[in-house]
Length: 171
Image: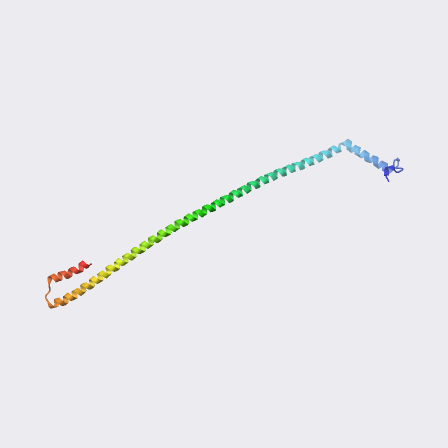
């Protein structure tokens, strides 16, 4: 059922023959006008544009990968710096803790020494007050005894002088 083998296809009054001749003439005109060159140029331009875009995309991808590598390196460096800062901070904290402990011990020792001095002063003052009270009491008792004895006697100047000196010597 080949159409070209049918009877009447090649006759001058056949529509198919004239369609075929018109098609051949159309292709010949297109060929003579250089349409195939224009199409090839357009396809080459489109291919060149696509190749340029692909090259630009490859360049951008390379830049992005380089930037990603740089960011990762900076991140690793920042993490290393943060770790170093943490170690330094921990060392400073330990140093400050030790210094604070030493200062606290020194402060406690000073306060204890101050408290011991105050206690010693209070003890000395209490002892002095007790001695003074005992001396005063002894003087009064001696005065009363001597007054009772002297009431029966005339006053003795030596005894009066000794009584006067007892108060000054006990203080």
